[in-house]
Length: 364
Image (cartoon, rainbow, N blue to C red; front, side):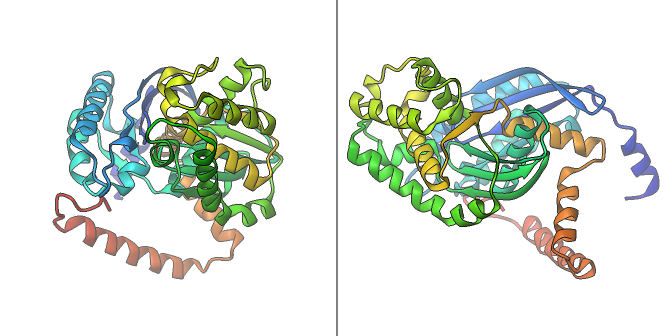
């Protein structure tokens, strides 16, 4: 970048930043006020769009779900009116990673929102989740395991302080899992067992490496963890955390109810009932696979991570660049060769982005 342009960029200051999270279950808008290098959360909007529920068998977003999503983003756009482009970051997650007609939907979504939408890869999602969670908890030097069960995927991160060490995203989420195993609303022992086994098979891929790395504290983030934690606390099965014993009791109550429509659990929000069985099955598999007995629940999540990442960008302390440099030092990466690979990768990316795409071609 030329010197004058760089100098001009360095003087840009924003009083407020905003993050938009197009999740597979809910859409979130979070606005924060910037004071020095801290973000003070202001207002937030949530829309239970259930984007992942609109995927057809051939992995296309149906029109009804698209319209519901566009209406939600139009409301977000009203709140964001007047925000400069550099003060807003909007990200799409699992459903927009896999939908075949995501490209056209994103074009429509950007028009009503008024800002670009970036579809992020699973590990980038995991990094941002960890950033949001770590800023919501007291700073600590010990390792934390962060688990985020979203609508279409589950992210696992081990890190210390604000630094992630291991990041993984698995294609199993509360919306997709509930549709797969509890589509008719029935909850029985056999369906729950199948759902737990399917989740366990996915989690098994990371168990050995994560257990070998280890952690001192386990933390759950986002809707599924918060919902389970609230239910366990409201029923006297825990003191605000998620416990193995509390999960067993919750599983028994789900099976006893026999159907989503018959669930009557203190602490359960009405809009979470339909996707609770899938989320509980995944959480049970997480506890079993990673040998957990207790998990704390965090208020931080992807949208807060997006805000702090955006703060780093506008103040030129980009956490992504810092993380890459740390990995390069740790694994003795050949820097000149890395630069050559970077150049080739960017050239290939530009070639792909610049060429015309079919309307139903997956987003790059």
